Length: 391
Image 1 (spheres, one colour):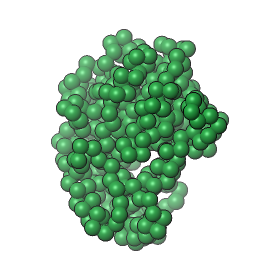
Image 2 (cartoon, rainbow, N blue to C red; image 1 turned 90 degrees about the horizontal axis):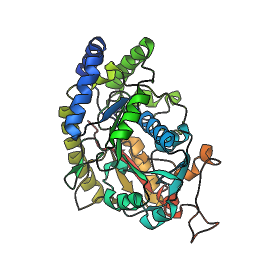
Image 3 (tube, helix red, strand yellow; image 1 turned 135 degrees about the vertical axis):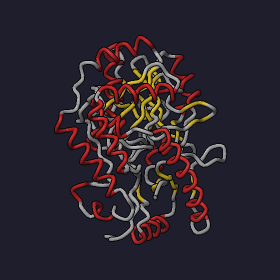
């Protein structure tokens, strides 16, 4: 195990001034939350915005609300390759996960397969912008709206990113963002929800009023976590927590048992000056990705996912590596030099052991009794990634 400068798989810096702002937020109380919510509404150009304890909490709460409004619909369609937090939120809400096979050249759901999965029992479709690479929302929206199906935009990895002149997270019926430690900016944990439909917004607001807030002890833990992340997410010190196996750093964990709470005033305080930080971080991510890709292309036969020939704002730079020998060489060199290159998600979601008896496969008509998501199964073994904000 390496001792020395090591890049975390993904991390958004938390500075000492952010922690001081978090403490001030504690004393400001509800005013701090109102300030953050107002800034987000202006930024996204929306009327309805809700703040939660995490991105998956925001998603699970939304799904349970939608199911309450349409109880006969209980299936949620999503890409078969996605952050495990997404299916965990679906299970938390008591709904069925329906994985859709993907196009390995675009990292998006196969539209033909998707059209076969949409039924009268489909509650919604979740479209993520994987790694920060914008998905083609309009085509999925067309399929969904023909059948009166809600389109949820998973913008957890694309805060502050625009595509075709529109802010990601505002192109679906509902959009959610994450403020976890490995996201665009971090408030230790936190989630943002933006909603277009006024009637749904009212329902969400009424139900959200019943949610618990963070306790005093939990707020203290948040500040301690912020201090820990401020110190040990630095490349010069990350090697130390990486040596502690019980922290499970870098692991992808499926855990549907998580709390759903309102965001605390400490998190809102940690987010002060978030627009300036976000602009700086995203610009650095693009610049670092360009340098990294140039260096890699001179030495390795790898492919990088991009659209329109531009470099997207990637939280983790995705690399497509097919040759077994190259994989072993890259991972070995990464470990020696502390580059942080690693598998992103260990398997497609239909390969998650805990989901084995929960999935609703809705097998494709042309593929009965065959592998549920063959393209994604192969894809999940060939995508690696690394931190695009290393300093």
